[in-house]
Image (tube, rainbow, N blue to C red):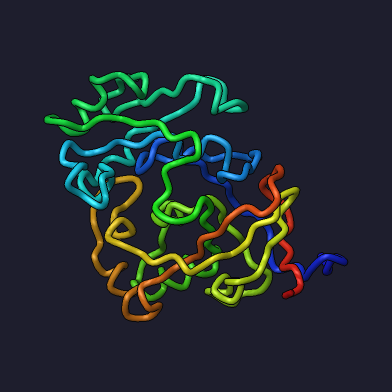
Length: 243
């Protein structure tokens, strides 16, 4: 596919992931509306610790419970996530309403509670993106294939060409993806969460060491919608001309 009048073709959407509850499992999507606050329904719920009043980071996440991503949230109506009930299937097989206090008790007995934020509960920016080439190259560095889900991106992009870490060069630029435009704000500084296997919850510290050693602690990028719109798997990605 060639360039468009509005930019240079740099890849295509290989995957879209929404996280209804912060730190829980992803919801793979074929298409989704992107609002001013990220993917519709993304990270609208989060659990907070009982000692949150004394902490600059109040969230109860994978840092505290590595198997939290084995809890699988979903919306009663995926097409209208902000207007439908949210449910969570626990590893035990029991399904809870996300606001059911019993779910908080199962996650962290002794003071874990859920909150809802209509604008989303994000550590930094409302969108995250990584290329398949970057995931593959990091896998080579640690000697094992890696699942992109480990890095919890909203958008998985198959870049045009084989060059890894191409997304770093997009910082400060704007991408057009389907009906949405996204400003790429900064590289994604990584933490211990990427050491946790998305299927088993086992840890591999070598992954974070490799990112710290080879990538200045960063992998993938964060961004902000500058024009809301609908995106779908397979959509081309265009890099708009610099200002």
